[in-house]
Length: 243
Image (cartoon, rainbow, N blue to C red; front, side):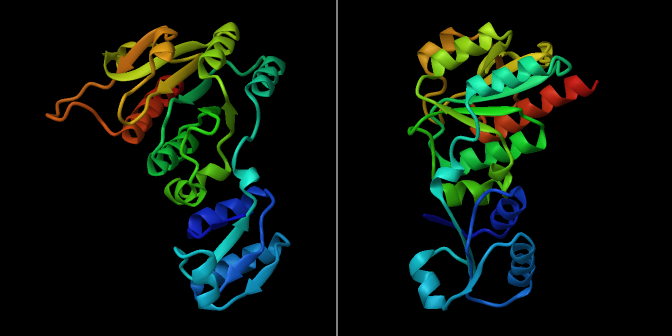
């Protein structure tokens, strides 16, 4: 078991309807009252505990914590199920898939999920076991978005990319040296690969890209943080589709 301690993370997890609980409450207060009411409405058990006990269970708490089965934070779907659902929904012309290649910092992972939620990403694919999985940090940084964004894990990212290509997706790698993202038509079935914080996109994935796109910059530093770049890229996809 793991424990979520961020207010927004707990709130969104409860609202998502996924299994969770009990809600452990050590300190009264406006936020604690709000969450206890929400938990009660969703038939989630509420346990009153002492501060010392909660310190031991969830050291980073702010007076409350939500118990969550770690298995419920991982795979939401499989790539195969996702592609099958697309095949049944012929009216959906614009689809955005994000592939995370070795994103190991849980703060970056959470921030990317938050942008995915804001800009309508349809699926996030990550490598099984090797991506950041610090659930509490991820849920806090994502402000609870991790409870809503559809995610799939795979043992083989290059194979996942091939399956996306077979399904009609265009694959774009994100790199500051790539061609201007604003010059590319990102409508339709689009997949964007985001590489690791230190080394970028791995060679096999880079070779599978149809194109490499970058964000024009006037700064003296050579690159943007990966989560910041993700937000800009996702926004551009949304802007093109709305226009």
